[in-house]
Image (cartoon, rainbow, N blue to C red; front, side, top):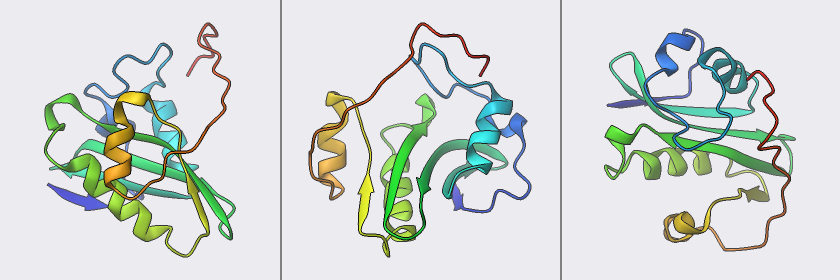
Length: 133
């Protein structure tokens, strides 16, 4: 396993394999690639040439960043991949004042263990909209 923030040769084919488990409207591999390439920062966990985990951040590059996605393929979970991705991203964003994310309740302890503080987040999700992602 190795980690990289270089997306220059990344293809949609490398993003298949079971990301977005339980998501009602997951992005296609092509849209997933577009999301990653449009992000401010990205870290990938790689097993050979296959992506087995990723994290992305969007940011103004000056003051704040938001981490919208951290995903690890089911076969690689509980092996420290998610923790490694978070720590690499936090280092990449260390010059910023504010780093936020929203998460489900069951993963709050994971993020607290990695240095996050629990706050309140508000969101809108269009779960019933099929937007061709």
